[in-house]
Picture 1: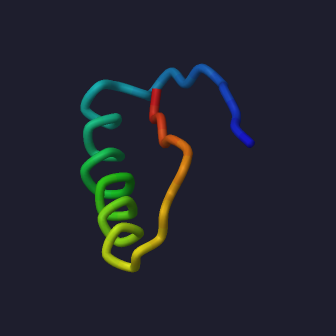
Picture 2 (picture 1 turned 90 degrees about the vertical axis):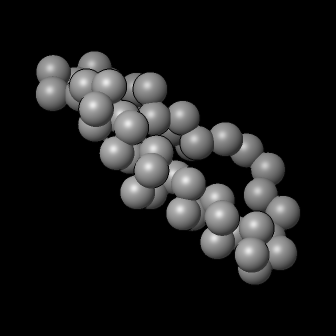
Length: 44
């Protein structure tokens, strides 16, 4: 499942914040719990 919609307020700075504050901690927690995540997270 996914969605694509151009956003006028989406910047490289916002993308970096999303990666650092949401995606990286989520993937680290999944790894710590031994959950074998298959897929991708792409904040583009």
